[in-house]
Length: 291
Ligand code: GLU
Image (cartoon, rainbow, N blue to C red; front, side, top):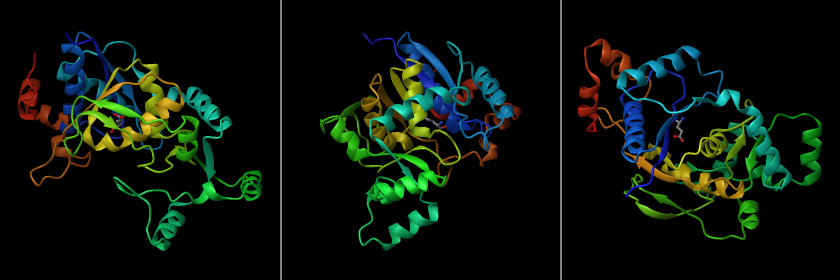
């Protein structure tokens, strides 16, 4: 017997939903319904410069059109900043973060100078420049009000958890077909940003806090986010959050094999709907049978 799972669909309102989002929403919805659980919606709108209320309204409309009933209140990340700040303060007071003054250009130049730049699954990762700053210089720059991000000190996190091995359970598959108990490589993404210079929070921090706050037991999302799960599990453990299982799914690609993006206007649900395509036809096209 499967246990009732709480899943979520977590789009950013930066454009109209396309077929890739439909696959994500249908997968999360069906996993919840088949287990007798709950399907939740979260609007990931921390980047207020890129997000628009009109796109949020369109998301709600598209989801309803697909026939997906949402359980419980919709969580909007833009309304949750106090909670994010609390977690950041906690991590910082435990010495698990450091300020990073680097610009993108400075990071690229530093990586180019290194004979062997540190690599993650998605290319070079932050080389740790500001982790190594002498305390006096760090203090001086902070006191001078120099703009900075906050990064997670992954090495300090590992010490904080006695370097015990971490894992997550994958019930779908990663990009390389990974399934089952996945051993976490906490340093794979490097010292990720927890609070951006321009925003008080980053994607990684908001996601783990909200999955916990919403009681998500099975995180269903595209396989492009599989690599991020490693550092997200580390964050969950150091923050003492609930540890969900994961279900990563394939991505929808266009005829040339390229992953769909919001710029591919012709695959938006709005355009398909206007062309007379029905939700059952969308399911059929995506290979997601109903019921
Ligand atoms: N907001 C993210 C996206 O649209 C999804 C975040 C997640 O599922 O963890 O890709």
